Structure formats: structure tokens, C-alpha cells
Length: 66
Image 1 (tube, rainbow, N blue to C red):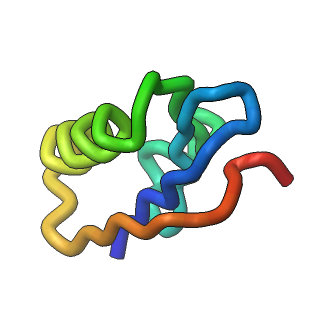
Image 2 (image 1 turned 90 degrees about the vertical axis):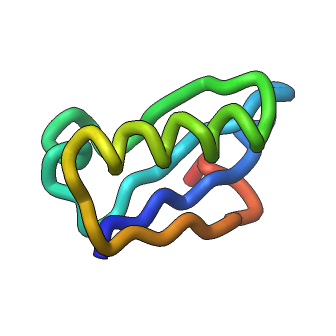
């Protein structure tokens, strides 16, 4: 199942860490920054739909920084 883990970057923006989604992991596994959580969620859904990921999940995480 493709998972978009969405959380704050620490710089007032949001990012997406991709898990179990090879198409995005090959591109570094990160997308962002986004101005809001809602913008990140919308982009995550668009990307998963584009790659025809039928099983998908969006979860919140405390931060996208390691």
C-alpha cells in the first residue's frame, strides 16, 4: 500500500515522505515543501492517482525531518 506520511518541515511548511511507493521512492522519497497540510494531502492524492495506486494511505507524522 502506497503511504504518504505528511508532516511539518520545521520551516513553516509541510512535506511528504513516501513509503511502499516505488515510483516516488526512486525519486528520493520526498515531496515538498507545501504551504499547508491540506495542500500536501491534495498533492499526495493527485500523485497516487496519477500512478494508479489503488491502495493508498495518508498519515500524519510529527515531522518530516529525520
